[in-house]
Length: 218
Image (cartoon, rainbow, N blue to C red; front, side, top):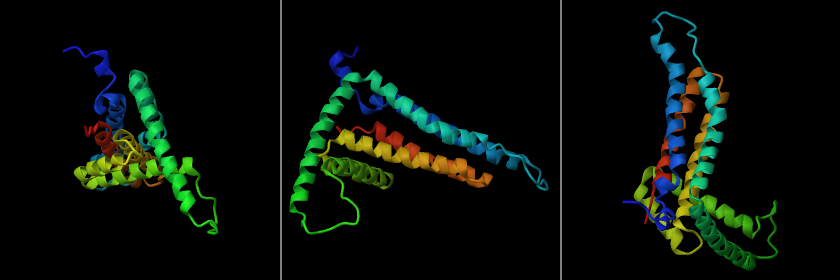
């Protein structure tokens, strides 16, 4: 059945983020290949061989290229689904305004004489921090119990300060951020075994990002 324009404006998340999901999957494979370039020569060496030569360049290269690859994939998804992007921005403006209003209300009830060693975030900054925090919380919980994490997303969205898609998207960003940090650490590690291990540490978070980018709660 041919999809109508109205239906194309409402893609499932796995279609909305298809290029990102494909890039995440490709990065999972690149992590395995880069780690294998370090492990396989050792596995092939004779038991008495010393000083096995391994190739660490794939790990270093991946640490530099993963972030641009994923960012380009996001941009491609946005270009493919411009109507969906416009709707997401409208929804984000509404929920952000609700979070800003809540933050301003909290500012009013705070004790004015209370002093802090560093300036507190303003209402707009608090709204952004709250969304990022919700994403972190959902990403962490999703690893242990996806059903509870989905329930948390629905609970957050029920108050009007968040919508489900933006919380899931924030969780995707949290998972990707953790994966990219692991890849950066792998690229800087001096020991080949540590390079391989840290490279593989990124994989569960890349897989988590795929799950979150694909998740539809409707």
